[in-house]
Image 1: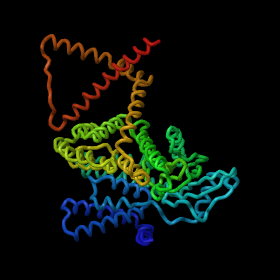
Image 2: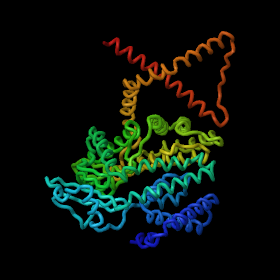
Image 3: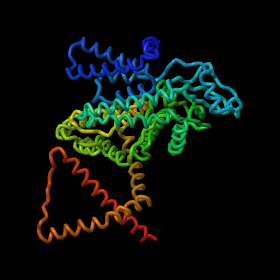
Length: 512
């Protein structure tokens, strides 16, 4: 009630630009205050008031800005701890609107819904967010289901907000090139836009659910609701039983089921990050429904993240290095995941991690949170002039939400042990993919396309050896050392890949 009262002022037409300008000024004032130091108690009180004003403004502006605030909550390199604590309270719950506002959309997208629905509870929606409302229905065959209906004209509002922020991002790039080199505001926004796309078109969310149902079949304690029907503005799916994992009573579950759900949920998320390269971007407790004696349901597939194979593999190395208390390997892999800018302090970054990683590794397993760890390293990297992939903030948010959900039901579960167990299967999948026919064909094409150049280089090396003109240079160049290592590693990986592929086919032929 308090939020509705305070934010109702900015909902008046014509105030949107004014709120955006005020929001930008508030964030800038917070950044200046942060650089000046924590200061007095009065300054802390002002910063808390400023953070609360930012949260309320973001909630009043709608779904796009709520998502943006949630992303900011994963960036301790950009906002203060006080601001992060406040932004973590961002929610997308709004006062429910009358069903009549949604009936026209339902008529247009599913004209036969009155015949297909035996009943629909229009008085008490199951959920009400700024993008859609959700209602409980009973299908004509008795199947319990839910229907999610997009709010009228909300898609055009969000798309316009995206265009506006893209213009702001380009302006930042021109006015603050050094900052943009480090953060890449436009790329960060693109990651968020891509993640939100299925929330604006429910047919895409339905595709995500179908893919997730296939992936979750191998997990004993998990399931994903089944899609019954989908249009761009209406999604009908089976009802997920139970309550949010955040409010469930752990005593109502057996220890075996609690740990089974927690282990399967973490393993499922790890598989999405590192093998499928598509993951649920918002697995907070409200999106994990549990019921004693039944499988846990992972719902709301409107926001997903996607990363490429190289980023996923590098992230595996980073997390393995963290669990093994290897700060040097963590630093090297992190830089390889992004890039060192011209003002990067690589030694300082390695020193930061040498202080952080042992403290994490020596903490109790219940306290180890990969999501928080990733965002902490991100803050160190930015401070030391190292550009990090814009996907990392979304990954960190997803990590933290998944692990937070598991702790609600099975706090005694070892996050590190689950990861180490999952890595065995992840690496097996990566090796299987590496030795696939598609990869072998790609290697063959690369060899054929680069064959002439390779022979030319080899002939040059032989001539240099014959004339004793070969010089080996060992060491790191100031500011670009990790870039050189990265290029050499790519060549090494390619060579090893070709060698392994040849050995693999040789073995297969000999067995036949």
